[in-house]
Amino acid sequence: MNNEIELLSINDLLDRHFYIPYYQRGYRWTEHHVTDLLEDIYAFSKSSNINDKDFYCLQPVVVKPKTWTENQESIVGYEVIDGQQRLTTIYIILHYLMKDFLKVDSLKEDYAKEIYSLRYETRPKSQEFLKDIKDDKSNIDFFHIAEAYKTVQNWFRDENRQLNRSDKDDFLKTLLGRKEDKKSVQVIWYSVEESVDSVDLFNRLNMGKIPLTNAELIKAIFLSSSSFKEDLPDEANRKKIVISQFWDIIEQQLNDENFWSFVTNSKMEKYATKIELLFDIISKKRTNEIDPLYTFIYFVNESKKENSSLWDLWLSVERYYYTLFEWYKSKNLYHKTGFLITNGYDLKTLIDLSVNSPKSTFEEEINRRISASIDSDFEKLSYSTAGDYKKIEKVLMLFNIESIRTNEKITEFYPFRFHKNQHWSLEHIHAQNSESLDRNKKEQWQKWLSYHTKLMEDVITETSDAAEQIEMQKLLDEVKLFNDDKLTYEVFEGLAKKIIEKFSEKNEQQINDPHNIANLALLGHNENAALNNSVFEVKRRAIISMDKEGAYIPVCTKRVFLKYYNDTNSSQQYYFWGHSDRESYVEEIKKVLAPYIKNQSVLN
Image 1 (cartoon, rainbow, N blue to C red):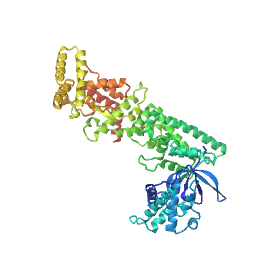
Image 2: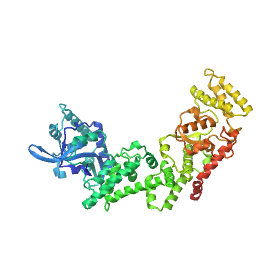
Image 3: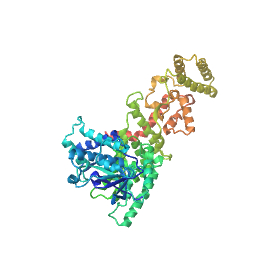
């Protein structure tokens, strides 16, 4: 479909003729819709912090050229496929201002043009009614038009608003401002060829199959028949073919969940057309931006700048994509930039830095940013201290990423897809008490005891130490004395304390802080409170089971529960996370993150 797309001011629409076809429903805007439009235009008309030739942008109006006969006269105008509610409301506002403010029946004298006309195929009397709006409940369309008119009238006459002549003048000047004026109201004008099936297009638009997203509107800027008019026809067509083909390549790559999760923290479902993410990055669209057409307007303005080239604008899109794709394929840059992106660093800033800097300078800069993002005194951070949780989480995330990046034998990349599609939490590697269990939820205590009962039974079977067997059996028998009816929270606390002590290093609580990084690992959020508060060996078995089932376990978390970091392990230490385990774990974190910690001392 060969479409024309441009921004037209409401002033540009004056003198035009619009035909509302039979498949359109009648006018149905409510007081809420009309008031919102009035408030927005008024606020814009009174704003002072704006750029030269700024404008308030309305949603798209989709039309196609049409000629029809009216009173034996041939009328050349447009069939409105989408946007008749906006066009009718603007007409009603203009009609009110003509009658009440300008006191005229025509805009000809003040604006050298007449108000545009609206012709309804199945409601021919509406055209005349719009010229003299009054209360009329005989027709549902007349009723809604009259209600909208009263809303406009009441809004301008509201005593609390206290609009004077100057306010109304500012409003009208803005509403009918021309493109070259300081302020104007503009509409996205989307014109399709006459050969297009109007009903089919209307249905597809309203069913959401081809929503006029920023991406679709931007595509029309690059591929409409008016694009590249400065070029010879063959060259213009060549550029459009190149853009069309590369557009599909970018869209396909962004639909790859691994690539998508590398370049953004947004969910894929947020974007119907994935390339729109790239346009949002280029336009610096903020996450809290309220204008749904912000990105499209940015590209329109960029394309109309003096000395600008539409082709150069497209090449900038390619440059952004290629930069991201280059990072994605580089094990080194993938992990470093991926860490920064995941932690909210502005992607456009990083790309611009990459494009405008030598590779060595760029890498120095991202190293600097990584260094600045982590706490070098991470050993002093505590899970239980306000503000430290996220700091620990960031350190452990970087530890996992760097452990993969710096190991030449690991060919896989850190899976940001899994990282961003799960809720992550800091897991205590070894619980030293059961305080986090809800004393009012008996099922939690029962589940906790079942986990540890199974562990004790296995130890009795597996150990060759007779004394250990006797001691473990004695504890197991004590647990089994208390059935569901006899089990109170106080009884449970006593049993849990004995079990935890049995599966802990001697004097552990005196020599280790359970809430520092030495006893924490990164793991997908688990709502199983009983498991979260279990001893090391119970968790180790659960981790192995989860891994077998295909759950994603971060590489360093997996290594923790395999005792990967402690070369001095003995069989006696196998069931608990001891002091030497903690020391070895922290030393490995220091070793892996050393380049960034050292860089901090240089920066300071």
